[in-house]
Length: 432
View (cartoon, rainbow, N blue to C red):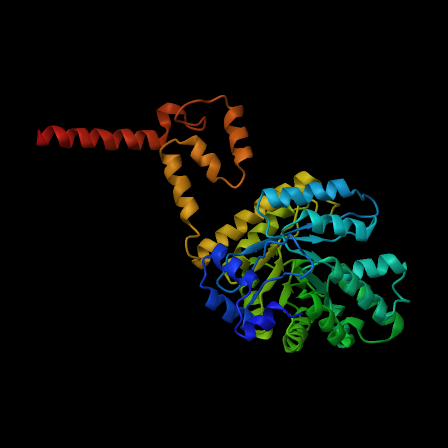
């Protein structure tokens, strides 16, 4: 068995590359070269049979990920599958199952079977859940779960291998310490056992599993900042440099890699964060959570984070992990999942326009033409959320070529059209 990276390095164009090339409108040879260089990944587990491949990275459309998953407080497979269906309906590119409660294997299998989108996972959650301990875990406990999840068909996994003993003292200056669940679990294990991070010491064994099934690494930022105060600090950058070293090791094993990025970053530091990732991680695709650009909007963090996501995408982030209104508060409902998806579709599309992705603005121009022509049905069909646009329009009980904001007398486009038509009539009369 071989990975997409292996084939790309050998000069072989796979069926996954051909599919992505047609969807992205990119030359397939250029795509192959960038996969070989590591600047593009195609997470495509050999056992994910109904997968529609998605490529993430340089020169491609900005992708978005939606997190789903049950907890011990609320675990319902039906609800999680409803979330997956919403992801598919509204155009999410990948889905991560972050379940920490319920029958984890059953939930994951159902999600993989339901989804043609690539599926991601954080194996550490199941390691802790199945063994009911952190302190007494053995490295093989991680390797066993990673193999199990890879065999099921998971396409990419978050591996928090960059949290090391030498980075822990750097956390002392932080306001709120560590906010990554995976990072916090590993730190507790490291301190209890007085040993190095097992995901770091057994990284080559993990690579061997990933290569067997072609699982892509999503090298996790266990020390990501959880508030603006802690953004771009020494511990975050130290971990980023370690992830860059691990990227080279994974590439030696022909494993695909992307790098996870920070969650809370002021607007003025986002560009720097993208540049640092590209520098230290050798242009591997950058996968950011948000980032949230302010900490004072609980209940609206799908908005605060989508602002940061658009800016990060504009400056070169390749992959955006959505945030819902429930962030920091609780498990999101299906409606919150939908709202988070739409917010991030807006962010990703805005970033693509700013990046100059070919044809990215075509849809905007078509909708603008429809708006000027008062072609409501065309506007709805081009909208990111046609149902919501139609609902707002229908609630106003309007069936006319104007909206209720201005009415017929003050509609700017009606006035302009009438003025233009009057001028044309005058010109025609003069000619006559």
